[in-house]
Image (tube, rainbow, N blue to C red):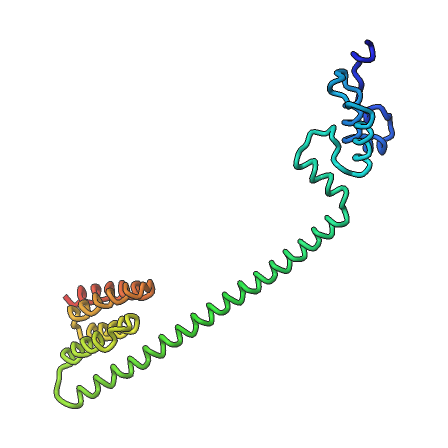
Length: 232
């Protein structure tokens, strides 16, 4: 009766100063011995064979039945039984991750360089179109002025109409040439005509969704207001 009611400490707490033995006993062995010495017979091992089976499983590094089943416990036992294989798999996974990371970084850099090169090509093409458009614009002015007498105001009004129709499909080039026409009109003190052209430029800039063009239009309009106010 005294043995049945006595409280039995776990095995790892009774080894004194032997820390190595305590670590060995702690865990599954503690649990196995605690189950074997339960006060309630129904909670003990049903037979000596059941106790021996758990001891064999402990020695083999397998999950013991005395422990509460959990995913973490089973995974931990698996890692303990297969340390070398798990370490190799982790090393391989780290190597693959490092290689993949390097590949992704290189791919990202290549994409960024490709985007930058494409942006430079687009900018060069825009400048080329503007240069060609400006040349055509100047040829028109010179040819019109040389063919028959015409006022500068009338010539610029024709030029503005030409830009609208000639470059209808290229909103950005149309806007830049319209700014050129508006500047020439402002130099001739035709502020009203310059404002009308700049308002069309604003519409063209919105089509291109170009913040730079919109900002330039706002600056030109502010300069135009200042110049027309000073002229009055």
